[in-house]
Each structure stands twice: as C-alpha cells, then as structure tokens.
Length: 106
Image (cartoon, rainbow, N blue to C red; front, side, top):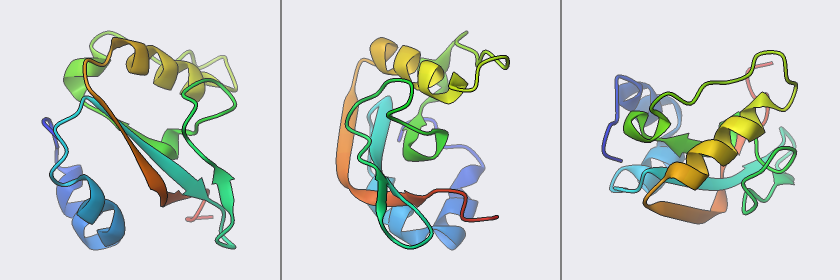
C-alpha cells in the first residue's frame, strides 16, 4: 500500500499472512474476508456497506481517508466509514481470502 505507517512492523510480526497479501498493494482501499475465532467465515467482505464489513477486514490509505471520520454515535460506524472511503477510493482491490479474525484479542 502507498501510505503504510508504523503498523508495518506490527503487521509483519503479528499477522504475517496479512502482510504477505498486502505488502505490494498500491490500491487506496484493500478489503478481504474475515473469520471468527473458530475459523469460520464471518464476513465475506465483498459488499462494502454497514452490516457487511467490519473495521478488521479493510485497509485504507490516509490520503483516501482525507476528512472522513467515524460517527461515534453509530453502532455501524465502521461500515459507514468503510463505505465512504470505498466510494472515494480511486483504486480498489478485493482479496478473496480470510486475512482477519474477528475479536481475536478478546
């Protein structure tokens, strides 16, 4: 991705499978499947809209985000944020494999 920040080192060590699939991406918006702790697909990630995508199954460049912000009063704020960024993104890439685990740190 273009604007990879300090998360690069964390991703490389903590989530190598994710890193292997995004390290050469140049797209503004990259999205992928998400699984639950048991390894079952939770979200396909193909539809970028509230209730169809989670903050854990997309990555967006800072340039694309611009002045888009989360509405902290909404439960589905991550989906709204993703949808707005997706609409604004000039380049997009869907990776049809699971690169995210829902609530894996709980």
